[in-house]
Image 1 (tube, rainbow, N blue to C red):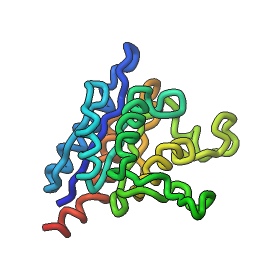
Image 2 (spheres, one colour):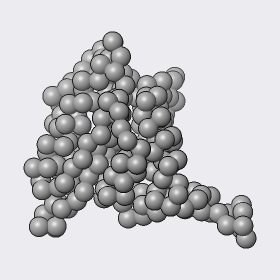
Image 3 (tube, rainbow, N blue to C red):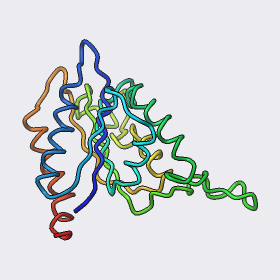
Image 4 (spheres, helix red, strand yellow):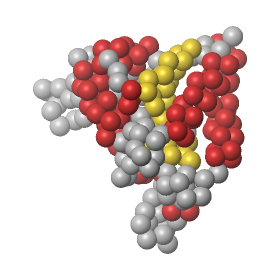
Length: 202
């Protein structure tokens, strides 16, 4: 059995109330619990206790971050969560400093994480179409991948010593949604990444 923390980082707006991200987060919880994993879900916009969230990161073997991409990054409320929870955990619970020493102050920045051996997964929803990414001829992202765009979140997790699982992305969710197909791809990724672990634990 794997301990899995799901973070629903959606920020509700009138034009985008966060239903898809809530559905993906709940779908992940149901599916992962069905495999025998223990799951805890935090819906950031509903409020949270900082100390509880630090402890949940310590408890988790995997952290699944579910969020819409707002202005090329995580929503402000999810970023606030990170600022508060991750800063509180810099006392050694999530990281012990930034990895540098007085003897070598310019070396090994970002290697002080204490969550080594743990994994994380990013699951993001986009207004942008799939074709906007990995296509050098597209004028905006100019060949960037989803993971290129989400690199700050990857670096946050790496700062704590965590290793990535494959990223999930649902594209064009406002103008040309394919929700059932997205659900099917999401289920398949969860099965691939977590069912083997559940069987091994059993």
